[in-house]
Image 1: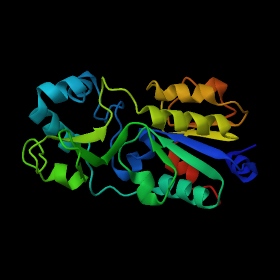
Image 2 (image 1 turned 90 degrees about the vertical axis):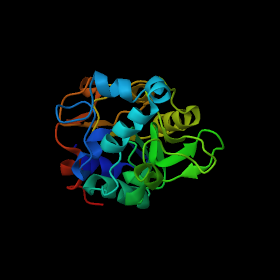
Image 3 (image 1 turned 45 degrees about the vertical axis):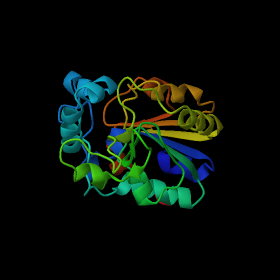
Image 4 (image 1 turned 120 degrees about the horizontal axis):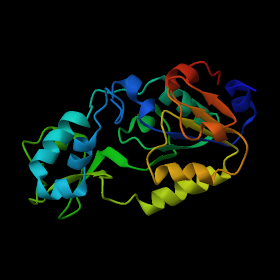
Length: 231
């Protein structure tokens, strides 16, 4: 049975995705040779660095994590179309770019947050990504407080509500499609262990540790695979 057959027969699909979903939109991943990752990036994108070297944090953040001109690609649009048809019940993503929502997906659980949401650490007032981009040095609220991106930094826990809801959708899914992620990030990758049925699909350019547990494995870019799906 191929991917099209599985999708045609499924009425309760959940998609769990990572950085590979957005690379076709011009957003680099974190761990590949051309990505922004590495120990230095992990250090800078940590809660401790944010608190102790705030201006340097924002200098790196604005240059490497904000892509205001990025647009959804085929993968995002196909997933949104599957939701509109009633087959896809939720998108669970490790990405912080907000592109699933821009493409039209409504039920999206962003495990690591969203760069488009930023809040004052003093009064809680919310700001868009433009406020961060257009700031000089440390972005400030009108009250004088620091405006922090609502994204999960290294050393911070994931949002418990977000994690619980994502886990519930995975457990209830008939078909779980994993795409564009190496599944090396925990605790997000633990979600896959909650899947209880027999239509686990892994789509990723490189092998993952879950390939041997999957019912269908496709080693290709996620947008190349999904663009062939007939909705």
